[in-house]
Each structure stands twice: as structure tokens, then as C-alpha cells.
Image (cartoon, rainbow, N blue to C red; front, side, top):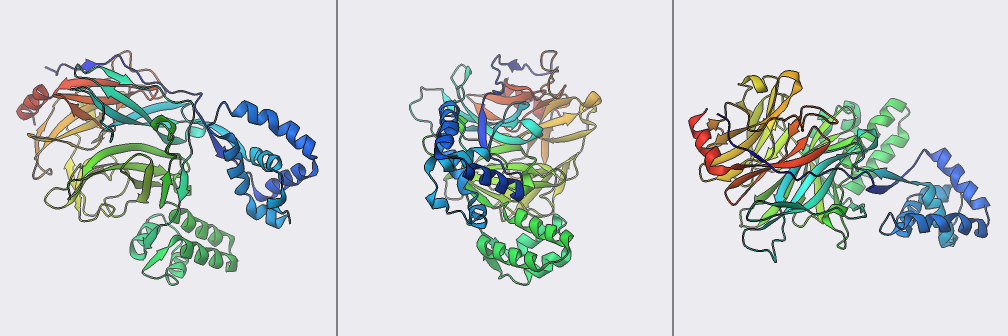
Length: 487
């Protein structure tokens, strides 16, 4: 007999009106032509064109003049090549040039799914039994490009869930590249990305054991200029793309959480940022930091990456390394176990693995933990977010893929001091898509990237066939009791 599941009526839908203003660049020659054309018109014509644009788009963006100015500044090198003194340009002409290199992108227009739920760092001014939460989603827009979007929610003592409406503006974060690289780890990752070996050796020989982004960029560009083989020039570009995978993003303090969208930044994630699994991680000193593993995708290559934040304003981003940092479905345990970081993974695409590490970004020696066992998961299994600690063991929500590519959710219980030991596993799904949840962008799919426990209930946010998200609740004691009788 299956457990009693309470499906909440709350649905979180995408909002196609939420747009981000992105820098648009269509090639150096064409860009120069656009700039030259704008330079030929009079100041009066400039004002007549830009004035209505500022009026119209100021209602759609927090500070449209700042955005257009920023995009104009990205063309500084072209201004120099055209012998144009950028500083002498009028403000309106700069804004007009910036507008020609700006386009709006609707981040949620295609799909909105795969939620991960986490405790909000701010739990102030709440009533007894309430908890404030942050929910991340995979938002998909034009061209099937994925980004990470957020909503804030509140759950009360009676398990009523209120998802706060999204703000009217989306903010693009400031990008900071100030990483110090470890040469050994950097070139191990470069080798995995199949960059030309001779190019790797050439650059590696010119670098110290640790190096900064500016040094790496200078060496790559200098080597690239001397290269006569066009194919190898592209390989040098790939090295820059990899270096760009390390960065920090900072959002303005006057933004709501729903205004902050983590959009693909580096070339190695240009086709999307997929399925962030957030976890509140307890450090050795008792303080907490929030991590999220996610998948960067460039159209052919998958790169697992790690987000780190303490406040959801400032995020550090870096790739994950090692034999175990392959494929999708990496999920970090919320604390060290026996002095080591612990991670779930699915390196082969259809089994669950577990691995241990002294370093949070280096993962070797994955050990198979679970194979598909039941008919509803014969195609593949994987985790649905970080395991949750209970006094009875680690609660791990899983997904299983069965006939007709139907995705369902399952649950396993892992031993607290040794999570490589399974002490319970449901022999039937916890959650199956019902007739109201089967239709959508990708039919027959229920999927989650992280759950929490609140007042004795397991709260599972889940995507509904990739078109929206909802929540399911199950009594924790009932679930544990059933897990202890099934394996």
C-alpha cells in the first residue's frame, strides 16, 4: 500500500513577461557599421530616436540608461579601431549606440521546472511554526537556454504554502573574474574538455604552479596571435572559455530574490545552466554556507559546476574536477561525514554513485550505490537533490524512469555514519504524475532538485511535465516506518 501523499493546490507558473536586457553582438564588421551609421546622424536625430526608447523601456527595466551605457562601454575596443573618442560622445549618443547592442530575452517563456527548496538565510519576524524559504527553478527561454530563477515562499504551521509573486524587474549581476588557478587542476579539466594537446602543453609551459586570470588571458592571446593554423586558434579560444568558467557574480542589494537570475555567462554554459541542487551546508566551525551543484552545457559538452553563497547576493562559481565530476545529478550532503565531504552522482547516466573527498571541488573514486531495481526505474535512476539528515538516517529522494519514459519519485534511507549503506528503499514510487500533471512541455515527468523537512512533514517541490511546479507533503514518521520495512 502506497503512502498517503498530500498534493498542494499551489502552482508556480512561468512568467513570459519577465525579460532580461542582454548585450547583443553580431560580429566585429557588422558592429562597426552600426556604430559608423549612428555617428553620421545629428544630435537632434539621436535625441528623437533614443527619447521614446528610454520612456518605453524604463517601465520594463530597473535602470535602462545604466544598461545601455554598460553595453556601449563593451564596445570600447571598436571605438578605438574606428578612431572615435568615446569620451567626447554625448550621453544620448552613447545610449543610442548601446541600444543597438541590446536585446530582451524572456527567461521563462518556454518552460519552468525542476525546483530546489532551501531555508532562507533570513528567518526574522516569523510566527511560531513558520519558515521562510527560497526556491530555485530551471527557467527555459528562447533557444532552449536554461538559467536559474528564484522565488521566495512561506510555509506556516498548518503547511499552507504561499509563494511570493515575482518582481517586475530582472537584474543582471556584475561579473568579477579574479580567480587564482591551480595549474594541475586547471589542465586536468582542460584535458577532459578535449582541447588540443599541443595547445595545452604550450600554454602550460608558460604558467606558474598558480596563476591569475589576467596572466592566463595574456599568454593565451599572445600565443594565439602567433598561431597560423585557424583550427588551433579555435583551441586557444576554448582555453579562454574554460578560464571564464571561474567567476563571481554580485547582485545589487536593492533587488528582490525573484529579480536575481543566474544566466549563462561562460562559453562552456552558453546553452544552459541546468538543475541546480541547493543545500544548506554546515561547516566545521558551525556556521553555514549555501552550495549548489549544477550542470553547465555548451551544446555538446557537460561540465558540472559549483555555486557558493552566504546571502544569495554574492555567488562564487567554479568547475568540479575528477573522475566523479562527470555527467549530471551531482548532489552534496549537507555536512561532512567522518571528516570528508560526501557527494551523490550519476557518472554513467543510469546508476546512483557515492563519493568522498577532502576538497569540495575535487571528486575521485565514485562507488556505485544503487542500480535500477524496480520496473518503474528500469531505464535509469538518479537523485532528486541533497540527502536530508534525520535521526533515523539520510533521506534521499530519487527519480526513476520507466515505461513510456515516465519519471516518478522514490525514496531511500542511508546509514548516518556510513551513507554507502542502504538501510531502506521504497519498493514503489512515492509520487507518480496524475492525469492533471502528465501534459506539458515534456509529458509524464515529475522531477525535483531538493526537499526540506518542516514540522514533521517532508516537503517535496516538483516540476510538472516541465510547464510549472507544485508541492507534495508526506508524514515523516510514516515514511520512515515504511522505509524500515522495505529494502
